[in-house]
Amino acid sequence: YKLRQDFIGASKVQMEDDISASIVVPRSQIKGLPLREYGMFPSLKITQNCEWRLFQRPDDAIFPGFDKQTEIDLGGEHVFVSNFKPIDQEEMKDLTERVDFFEIFTNPMKKHMKRSIKEGGVNMCSAKPRIWHGQQTKNPRYLQVRPDVANPRDKYLAQLGTRLYRKVASTEPCVFPVAGVIGGRRNNPPDEINGVKIRPLCVFNPIHYQDLPELFIDYVCSVTGKSPSTTGAGSEGALTKGPFNAINATADLNNALVSMILTGYGGFSSAAGYIGPNYKVDHDISLLVPEIWCRMTPHERTPEWLIKNGELEKLEDFELDTPEGKKTVLASRLGYRITDKFVAHYFGRVFDNPAAAINEEMLKPESQSLEVYADGIGNLVEAEMKSALNYFQDGTIKYACPPLAVVLHVMAYGHYENKSIHDPAIRSMFTREALLESDWYKERLVTKQRRDTVLCMRNIQSLEDFMGRPGYEVEAARLGIHEKLMEAQRELVRVSDDAYLKELEGTIGADPIVFE
Image: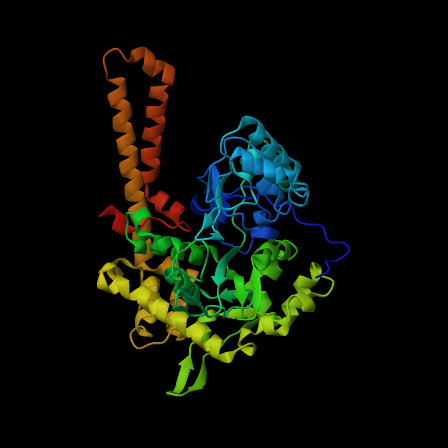
């Protein structure tokens, strides 16, 4: 598909990958933010990457010269790889002598292959994944040094440009709050593996938006399609990985839900894998979304604007005739999806003919196969119900905040206190106004204040103990322990004051369960 003549690819600085720390603060507490970009968000989320290396799966590296970044990374030193074929000196020599293969690589990989011949031993080539049961594995992996660490100049220039634009002094922090939430979802068509049928999930068009109740039904379930990274398909999200998380999932979900309500971010998602059973898109849409989003003005990214202008359409439940009789298909769980107006308006800022890149069948996957579409939604709803029932069986439903409890009840039983998820009384529970007025949110703020007070007292005790040790006078002076003690005492006074509770409004506070 032909790009516009004036198209220039966006320069992107990756800020995070799998593991990040985050905080939500009122917008008023961050200096220098332009209201044009952030004025619509009363609170903002700031994230910090916790990883030095990113766990990458270079699918396209099997084509020599295609994935240039992977070849640069794997051609360097101190590389950790998994699921690549071990290649000895003789085989590596044969590969370098295959002109139609070797000459297509970028220079870093060519140098790596030649160097491995000279040094001997066993090595690897980016285009040669491990052979497993007679076939190349679809899950080669390597640890990539974070791009902003490997190329600090790009991040520095981005920050410098931002400082100049915002008029932020070099002595002040330059923060980049989250301005959009656009998750990715892997979709698969109906399939079969070793005689086991895989039900479809390809019911989403390229970009969907969901209001908070429907969005958190998705988040709780964290369903995924068939992927090279997993052994199958099903509920496979980060919140389901119990061995990596020692606290109840309700704590994470409560935090995430409070965060989304406070910030007012719209919950968008993009499709990967398949759109309907007929269109395999892999990660093409995921790669396009940043290009589309950065060409939209801040108000154009808001769901209210897109809905008002007919660029998002709401999906409704519908009846389907089946051999067993009429069946209700809960299509409303999918929220809203982009229309041909969205494609013409925004994809048209990238493509010469956007309708050729995103056609009518992709915008309406049910037109490819209504049977597959209905089965895919049924698959989602069943996975959501199964996921939610766990919270009732293990008793953790009692730790869910009221809006999360609503979500879990609807997922498990289809209603909450005999009210559907579309009931205005239910929807109102997910508003910022209702949150700020609620007793349970105020309890989160009090819990946060209590924990901060305990932390300050512990810090003071530790500093006093250090200063009181015999023979530590010189070391305490060198480390400035007395000054640190004074600072900790001032902080204790601050966090113990009633004014601190007011200062915490607009933050997520703290989940009371962890304090028990």
